[in-house]
Image (cartoon, rainbow, N blue to C red; front, top):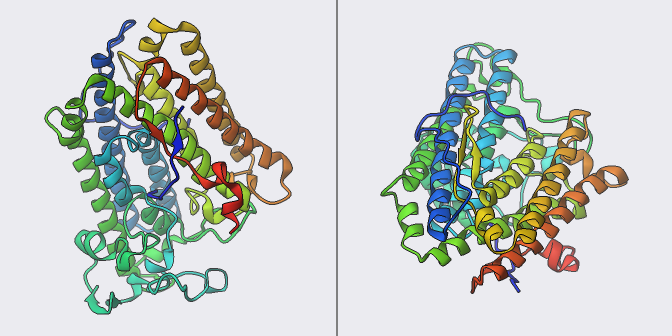
Length: 431
């Protein structure tokens, strides 16, 4: 999600899918230079985005099956494909901070939270009928062949990728008007989660896509939207995959920096994701508010896995490794190698902190298996659940402090990590 965050001073549901794109190369290295670490970091980015593209295409195939035969079984399969598609993508988020080309693009594919009434029907008794901040709060594109956006009438009779990306995404300059990306697809596959902080995800029926037995109206346009938004996701992922190939814009921008600036990019991504974004905005904020609307994958109740793989992405960046969706490993020169050459105790400390974070994330995954998904864990008066989430936050904060020590050890200058009011200024959250 793209948010304005306050800088702080810097003092596994694996998908059973086949990868395409760059070959799954195993390139282990016990020694490292700054150059080799940065190049390998770019290689991992290419592999992750390639896997994200592969899984998005598999999702599209599952959607085709659903629309050909709109059964509950096929809807479940499409949902499973969506969850599988999240596995590689969430591991890419460590590339956002420090790589401007990624951060500028990310809102198209992973923006949240969203005012879902822009896209489709909602339960107005819980969602409401209007918002002082968003005139398109309940616009319902699927039910509307024209809309007024920015005082102008817009033809929405044909739902296309271009309409979604050029007209609907952040329409009227409102960030909550999220029309594209994973979460728009998630909403279309699950529908609203009306269970609050009680167990249960969205319950959209398969008949919402059935032309012969249509429920809730406009099934033809709902189908069109689902196809268009998934095709748009694929094209956006193709763009970013190409950006990380040899000669691609993201790789060029990274490698045009000095090796030290490249290391700063990696550590900025690690610390900013761990602290401000994942620890703060995606986790602590929802816990403070006890609000399921702050849940990252709020329609599917898949947030425990999204958080797990965000944390895994940070660990990947430090260890210089990535497990591809076909089960093969990409390994090479790493920050861990580089730090160990200078301070083996600090490297061991960082590995311990990363493992503790992963264990805390795994504890939330295990709780979800027993019905305590993230929205249930953050519920008011769920003392044990709240503590599981707080342990995850604490581990991310602790991990970030060691990241700062590594920045100092490597004598890197001018780095600022993203912050969050929920961690830096909690009273501001309630103002």
